[in-house]
Length: 141
Image (tube, rainbow, N blue to C red; front, side, top):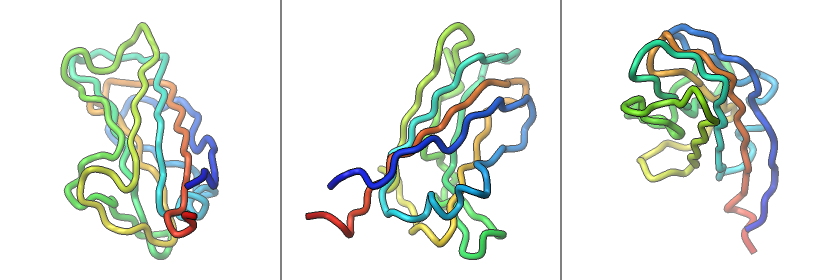
């Protein structure tokens, strides 16, 4: 099975706050094209004041590009860094990976896909890059 696509889907500073930020709407259809993906999050320049700073990336899917739901019905993120000690490091680069399909029970991808990115405490901010490699199980040889 070969790679079909490999690209950066997010590269921005995520400010403090409890609301998630999302990948660009320009990526919504591209993220839904293939049925397998590997995801890497690179988090650096972390600022945090609390002791439980973690990272979460949830895959969200939509049939109309307007109404979204987490792909994993339990809400378990596909990519995460646990907020317990040590959590996100402020002095080095943090790296986390995940995939779809993953080890948890997930639904199927609809026509549109986006990533919801957030920190586990609202006093954390950082620069976040997210990379995706996609494969298509239907095209195995």
